[in-house]
Image (cartoon, rainbow over all chains, first blue to last red; front, side, top):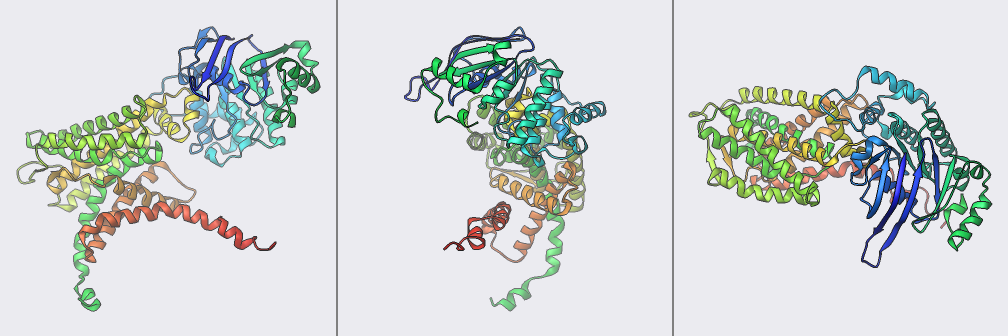
Length: 264
Length: 317
């Protein structure tokens, strides 16, 4: 479903700030894979997601989503294949627009936007049902502006928008990092449910080791722009936080001290 | 002149006499304000093209009417010229990476030469006696009626357009570009569309203004953006104060036009009070600065460091 082949990206090439953010990364996801991505600050986790999303062009290598080579496509042209939830709750929704308007925008992802009315009565019913499934009572507030919602509600809405049309790949970029622990747990639970119900393929960046272990069927660890660990299935389900810390120091030659992964 | 003489010299009847003219002007400039609303409020883009495209609208309209083109057709051509001006600003910004406000200043200054070339000289008169104009200051009641029709149709069209899929894509682009892109929206195209639409309206306003005053002038657009902003801000402040939670996009647009009318009424009163005409731009700038500052100061009166110090600080000292 996702084939990242030998992808590299260097920021600020030729300057003192030169940073090789992705170093010949190779990653292949099968349909239905739910992969958690973990690593220290600056390891390249978010960079990897941005490369897939098309935030900027990669320097070399190729990215294929659902059989379609997207290496040469800018973000908005890849959007039809992707669902995205960002770290900042403000980023994924339009605050000045109503809940139903945000959903209607997501329902038209990848389609030509013409002069038809933005939302049909039939869609409104669908939105109502899908919002109900979030269990946040948003279905009765479809006409209010998203700016009035809390961060957690906005992330839940963004998740719903990202999965409204089944995307080939769901990208979750530390999407619970800005939330309080209770809300974060709830949004993660929703993510789990949405992914399994719709048999989605997903890539979730997190800095929380426990979350990375508990969720998904596969875990990759990144360091210095490379994937240094890739475990799945039985082996992944047996992982503990201590295992991960030990593996990290073995594989990277350093420890995770002073990093926020330790604190979580 | 003493203060008593000053007040004695003010005649309320003269004020009443200038009101219809101010309302007509406010309506015509309200179309410009609607254009400014699209860029400033919806697209979140400070577009200074307006000062140039307003004069372009006037220049194109007057020159075509002088060449024998019917006034409504001349206005249509003015709208297209305005759209083109907006498109240039948009392309400077999206295709060449020039910051929005700077791109619009470049277009504005370029339009000064373009407008001079269109008119051949700095000022061109068009007499209502010789040509069938859409409106004229000769009859303010007709001008108000025509202005109302234009404004009503434009507000209707804008209400519809910003409720369509494309209009919503523009709104999303202005509100949260990252979200728009994630939903597959080409934000560069949306900016081009909005800037064209906006400047088309501004040029229409310029074309109507030129007919109303009976001439087109190279400097008629100087400070137009500030007047447009004044109208937008006055309208928005009134809209949220009066409508509170029952806000509606169409009504909000109507309030923008109302803001423009109020602006011209205030100018009328200020002139009636015999303030020097030379100071009008200064006066306008001060009004806009006050209205822009009010929301900020209001917020600060609720929560500021000075207030925090007064409320809680000092206890530990």
